[in-house]
Length: 538
Image 1 (cartoon, rainbow, N blue to C red):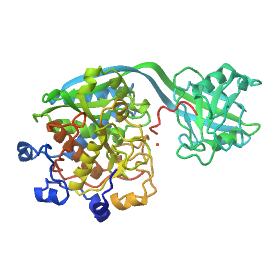
Image 2 (cartoon, helix red, strand yellow):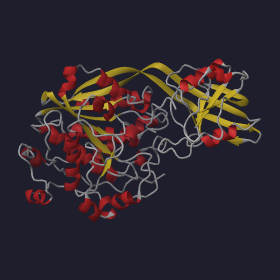
Image 3 (cartoon, one colour):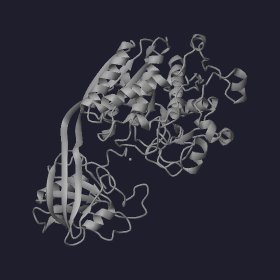
Image 4 (cartoon, rainbow, N blue to C red):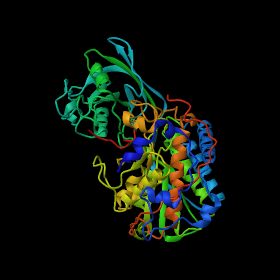
């Protein structure tokens, strides 16, 4: 990602945090910034500029308020497979239909799972201790239900851990030789899938399973000492299964330990949910510009930032564009079951015939665009940061440059963010569709340099309510929402009317800078994580 060297250094935290009213720059200013339009790049259409098209942030907040109300009325969640998600689908589809979009509800089957009530892990002896959910332990996805108090029995543990990951704890039936039926199996992370360990433990007569991290201290970002995430992959066991930190597991491995383990879960391998897809009335159906955001929350919270913010941003963009005649077709996607492994977008892309796939010239993804301790992150389409994942498909670099130009013209800083595969651009990149988008940060910690550029607090998570019940309307940063919403609508307008698109016709598109309607107060009400949904082994 190209850094804004001079401009970024010049912007103060105070100017970053001011909610701007952004207006189109005159041509002389464009030239001064080195952004004069190249041959073949479309100029802004006069009728759009004359219409006073603006980003109505208050309207976006009204969408967020509706999503909050839906969660409040449905147990505090909008997770796929729950009534809260179905109500979210109904709301979004209804708004789009009323605006004249052709709406399709794409249903698909997925393995549903949630904790019905909070799990419990307590050490009864030798000393009483209560372990804290999401700090010391969590329910493994697809755990069964149960309420057991029993001795803990280690299964082929390596303590202290080896210097490098090597544990085979619980990977073979022979590991359970001598296991006492009714005990709770304590199993170390290692070289086979979690599901295999749990199935073998159940077959050996275990009344429950505690899986804990292997314990190597120096394996970042794959930290083998922290709280282990992951899934059993499928609901193939009916006993409680939890994951813990290495420290908790090491404590529980002590001789004479007895614990109480309680889980109350709901699982359904054949639950159904839906994607919402909306096509504009205008534009060439053989040249599709696609914008997407996941509509579902995690089971533990309403998901107003993750990802009500992206949902509301592209929903209001669709409303802004409803009467705009365009050269290319716009398609807006609201994905289901992202929080269980990008399942909605994977289903959509996998089901596209080759001819339909070829019509999608680009995909823009917006997942968490209003984090309270935000950055403005642009997906690194050309891997110019030279870290993490490689570049996106050809044309992704042009999308990156579009957003860079937009934020430069809006006098706002930005940073690069990697294509980690943690959101719905993943399936599109996987089939070669140019992709890009924006992201304001999740559970990662803001650096001192980012705090200097964007304001906020260094050393604090971008979103301290990430995947938590406190991800409510109060968790939204209005200034981040305004900045990113302006960029989303600018991209939709520019690419919808462009003669050249990244998918096959690579060209830099001139970024229209839209007015942002003012009138919203400060950012989030206060500062109070894991997209790694599909880890099933090691």
